[in-house]
Image (tube, rainbow, N blue to C red; front, side, top):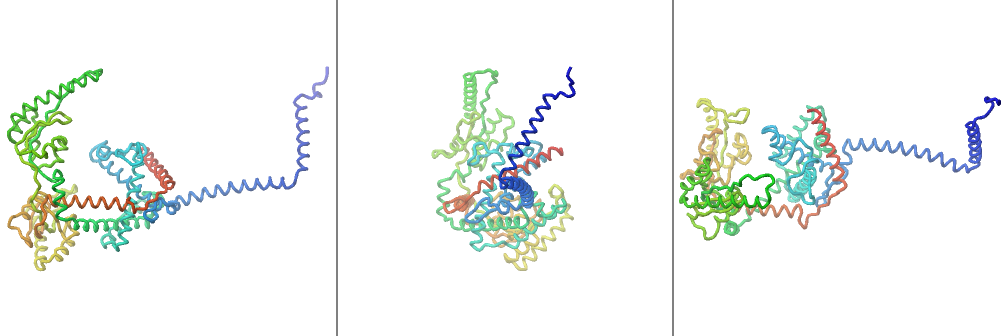
Length: 560
């Protein structure tokens, strides 16, 4: 028998053969060009260097992005030659998002879960990317709220930049109060930042997006104020340019928008009987027709009993115990109100050319039929308004903003303050003096900064005591007095009556608004407007903002 210790295995023979082949290959390679060998060595080094550079660039980009450098440099859009950075776009995107979110969340907090969605269309418990936008958006078939924020940010930029540029061109500047308001807003941000252990710039970037800092928000706030100043100046100019003929033509051609009338109206609903779940379309249609016919018969019978407002109310109560004089007999109502309550067929009936007081009818609407009785024909409101100035010395309020109940003795202090203001004015009875006193002492935020002035005031628009004083038949320009209301004591100065009636003033306002709309279309998107948009930059930053918002929702859900 052969010795197995000296016998080579098949595996060992294979390994020896493999070593020979490798040695032969090494000998052959040693004869190759030294340049090739060197090139291979260099290539290895280059690859190593490129890897290091890539890593460094990644770190550098991360640092630059953290400090918002790309956002400050990249252009999101250009408005008539003015370049707008991605950083400014970020501010407006987050501004629109935060406002919408906060409004919806406030409704939920105050009125219960779901009310925010009901009133705003936005669900504060979901990210904007995962919920459908409730309105229409040009260029989108099924837009999300994220799409809406994307486009609204560009719309804000287009408006503010366009108008502020026009303001600068016209030499319009900021008022001292606007400068102070901007400083106050930045100070408020700074306090919030410090209370959360942030620098102001880091807080702004975290709140409104990368690249947003104090310099940028100051620029944005100044632009907004300049835009507002230009729009206000333009509004005054357009309003002053409207002629009496334009106003008369507007009232004649669009009487339905301005007239008021007295009408009695109530619904007779077509209640469809309950059908089985497997009812056919034919059965459903038949049931609906039957309900409609029954409602029509009932409405016709009720109409016969209607001869005036009293019988109209009685007829309404016979089918609805909750009917009341205020819900049935509508006095001084408008076409818009009637359309909202009963449908446009009813308001159209009122304005037919052959209509006369005392007419009545049964008119079909979506719910069934409406019984209507016209007490008075549509007419314009020919009451002239007045202009008045006042300085409010307000009574104290509680934490909820409600006026506290005071004794006569407690009220005396407030009356004495009002008397002191009135006495000071009477020493120098000029508009300038009243304006000065208003800026110092007026506690009515709606008029404090314009000399306490309210223009175009019509009966019923002010609280009773205020209304009664200014519309006293004996009232004349220059009259002064102290009037007590639930809000406090008002130092009154009657300026005078207007030349325009309420309807004429409403028509003038409508014509002014139309002119402003036309101006806005021309400024922000007309033939002379040159607007360019960088889709790459906008899409890139929107993705980053969406990631930030998504993380906020994830963190919020985790904390709950």
